[in-house]
Length: 394
Image (cartoon, rainbow, N blue to C red; front, side):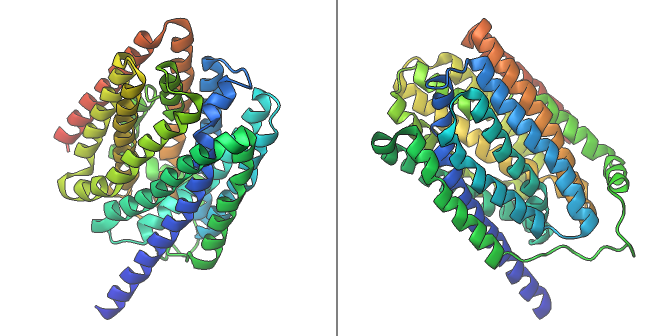
């Protein structure tokens, strides 16, 4: 019992250490992302279709890399080296947005940053899940996401404060400082927690993939997430919509701050509630809240309502990102397959993300906000209905 208690304490320390890594990383990232959509569609001259393509391709590349990094961490039985590589690549790449002379340059930098996120995410999520007892995995992810998005509150606030004095480029260059702090905390404080495999030698990546895909309920869960994902536009379109509604360029960072305040506030409660009420039920709630945010994209009429839209959208992200990751161990119990399972989840999410943002951006350019928002409402309603059926057939 004493040994188990010490293991749980060590695991909790790991969760908090990874939370601080994400805190500093998000300070760095959100300083940039609070301004990037307007930088792309303003000084760099990108259309909304191009904005969707840049966001979608960058995220798709990152999500695709997650499949390989998750499987590789299972194969090598080591998470930390890949986590460190990914955080380092992201920290080093983001300041180069300041040197971008056109949207193509920004596309390359955005892709490098997302590849870095892709390298780290599946091994990191597996490491978090291995640092907490199964009954407390939702709380562990909630703690991590709340710390992550505390950083995401500080980042836009810094961008808002610095922008009048240093402009887009100055904010982008300053992002290297918190990024370097994140890497330092990771190297010094995070420990491996993977459980020993019951197999005498590591299985191949393909064997791990086959083992995970043999779990039919897990595959069904991924299919539902894909249906939702193809309509789930990202925060960039919320910021562009806020600009359309009359929010000044210098204040759009505050809209992003509102998204992240809601996200940070709801992350831990959503994880804890998911542990008690059921993670699948919380996903139904997440899909419903997203549908409400899509409706507000259509219905909002002024700058004040843009902040309401941001809060609702942030609540959706806080629920969905916490619970979607926390539900994975329920359907893939073996620790040695967790990295692969998270990799597959991220692969599905990445291609869905690409489709969602390209389609949403194209519909905005070609048909307007009414058709674009309706598309997202329909896909989220279909996913919610499918998840209810999934729960009933449990």
